[in-house]
Length: 388
Image 1 (cartoon, rainbow, N blue to C red):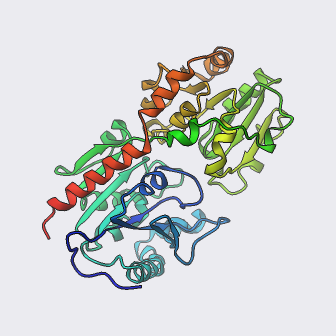
Image 2: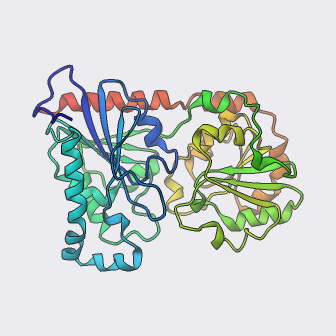
Image 3: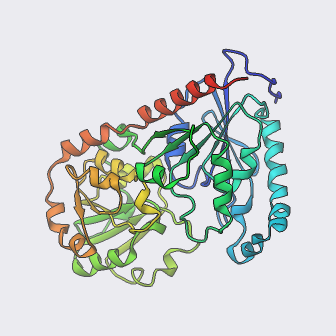
């Protein structure tokens, strides 16, 4: 592999180093969907975190034109031990191996030029990423990263340090933008989440084996398990014992399902676990009703769920608890419950919803193609505006 030149010659590829809070192969998120659509003249290095019990890429692998490599860093430290990191000196010592490994791969893979672009959604890398030489730096506010459970008190300083160094910020919601302390002069672009419309809208004749024998109707949820309101899921299962409640998706928490005493013994609640993105439409299209029983809290209140658009593209009826503004704006095509009690009562009404064409038209307006094109254009414009 050749090392990069010190300056970017016009016509040569843009080089982007992205520090991610989630692993590329763990869960399909905006990062994979957007970065996978960047033009041919972009080269991307995706630095993913270590996570206990998951597959890692200790040696770089290619995902399209994206290089993916795992680098253990502060976020990877178990919480009980992690409390020791309140000591600033210990935090520095623990972070050094990750910094060295990151710099090794950045150099070897050809991303060390000061003409590169630095992108970040993993706040734990904030202070390091803020001081890496680059032409352009940006933050992707895809969540309120300070509101995740167990976030240490010192993480806010890491985020503020990084925000003070950026020229550009993408945010999934106006509420999240308002919550962040963005310095004046930083260009803020609202860039929500979306859907690969054809992937979810194309009818599938495949019936996954996991659906065999389930009572109908099937009330399904597809997404990360850690953010669902399990008490609400249990209430639905108790109120409608002849219906099947199907939960599809991975969990960040190790052995999540085994710890769910409220629902893991209920006979009509079925947990499938992770399903590959390529197979997800086969499952979702067999939902009689797609559920969004998410927790209503500080973290989810400023989020922007791409499952809203995936469900809608599939054409199935959708029922959501009222937990974020993106859901509120979609009231014309889905059912929104103001409370858990109303959510349970609205099941029959939502099941009877026949607005399939309206839902799919709504989803088509939120394509990843358009979102990726917007991000690329904003990055290229900002890049050219920066002095060499």
